[in-house]
Length: 281
Image (cartoon, rainbow, N blue to C red; front, side, top):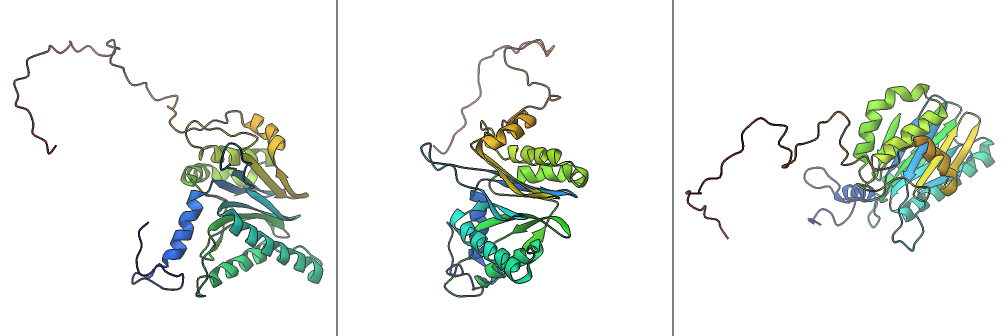
């Protein structure tokens, strides 16, 4: 990796105004498997692609329940996500003990944003190498927030983080106008379609590698894993990667053997009298 004299800590600005360790933390998010979140008028949904380090190992947990009305999906370093999720749980429990009410989603998200931002102003600390999609439902309705290691927190109608997440964002940008009026089932299927677009070529969504989290009106945060996901995948139908597929209206390229697609006469072979081209080899 490229190194310079301004990336030894997270508190030193480069001459161009950049904090390189924060940017490196953002790159760590891109190495993690994808997570997609989206929200309607009544529900918020997060779906995530789990990854196992090897065939003999279990799949990494990608969605974490925080409270009855709150959960997160992660991409990046799972241990960092565990620290942040424990902090969010402490904040949620404190709200119930002190105020006797669930903590507002915006407040707990601001709390982890402040916690992450302090790491960019204190020498000897590093930014969290994880991105979070926070979904929740409170008295103001359903919410979806994206947390970044810099401490930036933004609310979205739909968001995607992790490896190949740009493909999911492209799908969300095409379809986000439908989200507010979607039923819960349609909202989950939109999330699964966006997640499917992040799959490497030749891979598919399975009960082992797919997680779904749902929260909304009269619905506590519910996590679907393993066999609980099977019904949703059956409703989705096509679970394979869409990468490298030819669209239905795209004409098939002619092959060398297929001469019926052209009326041009065959080219006669002639002796090659041109001089050879010299190369640097």
